[in-house]
Image (cartoon, rainbow, N blue to C red):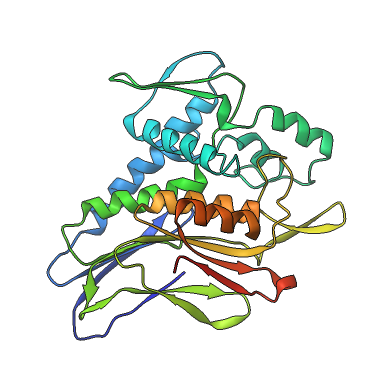
Length: 305
């Protein structure tokens, strides 16, 4: 995701930093300024809740808890898990943050591996890999419970959530917040909407997009392949099988009022492929840009745009 769309006549206040293994950028217009310390402090709090790389985060500690035991959780973790279960249902399981054990055996998470798993190992991990084995109890004292020994990994939604939370801190009608390519913008600069660009695999010129007070999230890792059973795959799993997704997509970009929701849908669509992604976008009335893979000459499909 490339950022742009501004002339120099109107002052932009820009600050940057690092979080979640990537970088963040906040841009505001005119006299509305937020300090880097304030943004960093909020991001540290979010990481202390959602990070799988931090062994002492709230999520990591929950993953170590036994099954069939209600565990009190923060409002923030409960909220993201509740939304995750809703999107799991909407996407027929293609968005599933309960596949932490599968992510681990494939080496896509914290622990790197020397050898990819065999199908027996995949099936064994798949048994303990779905958010459907997570129960939620709302109310004043929120709690969650595992019915199987699953590990939750919220990396496909946490960056989007963080973007939304940073946007809440801004006392500005004109801003742009970006974390690792997930972007939320509001307002105008020099009378023009913020302009974003979606990177193309085979073209140095990005696809221009004006979110118009919406967020945009992109999923795609066409640069990063691995070989398994003699075939080439991207680092994206099909949660329904536990195997690498046999997707015909190079990237997916989704527009939505909430960055966390766009983030989750983009991940699901990458795993399900263009046919199901198109059907999902039409069913939910989502604005989506699909870029097909090299076999389809990186053709571009725009839905509701």
